[in-house]
Amino acid sequence: MADETVQTKVKGVVDLVMLIDCSGSMQDCIDAIKSSIASFVQQLALTDANGGSPVKEWRMKICGYRDHQDNASTWFVDNAFVNDLASIQAQLANENLRASGGGDEPESLLDAIFKVASMEQTGIQDAVAGDKWRARSSATRVIVFFTDATFKQPMTLPEAVGGGISDVVNKVMAQRIVLCGFMPEWEGYEFLGGADKAEFNYVVKVADNAALAGLGKPGAEGEAASKAAVVGLKTISADSDGFRKIMIQLAKTVAKSAAVEAC
Image (tube, rainbow, N blue to C red):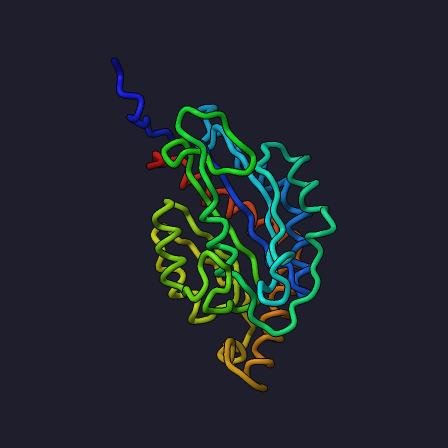
């Protein structure tokens, strides 16, 4: 009798979570994602010259986060995994995903990544579920986050309270998650990028990089750097064609990851 615990590795199947900072300065970026999500999905399923595609099957869900300490009951916006463009667009259009609040500059990105990475998974023999990852050997798992801010630590999420960057990196690696980021150029992200297979894009830059050197610092220096980061992402988001190209390149990155067997 065959051993039912043996898991056959697959490739070309993707579970993707798009994790968006929903604090007050992010509306332009959220709108840009809305307007370019169709291009992303089209690229994700694009066939090659031989009629094949690195991504044979995909599911996606849109999640949003704000500051966990500000309001622990509403800081995180969750959705179910879906596999069609109309449903993704509906999730992006949800009023709960509109940019609001924020308060101080850093946000609860670490808590949000930890929460998503800790999501339950279905068994290898079970049907897929909208609120769970597929079994680890059944799909490539990807988290893509967008933010114009630094992140708070330690974490305040009950299941991770007191934890920091290393705890998030360990969780992401243990769950075999590919972590992609679009964020300001800040030293904290260099440590978060230590996760295996992480691919970060520093899309928030200004002509004078010194303007971003104060990110994460208190007082006037940190405030000026935060404003520079917000302006930088707004500029990128306002370039609809440029942002669409960013999303297409992101889809290529996801497809490349999917072409490797899940494990």
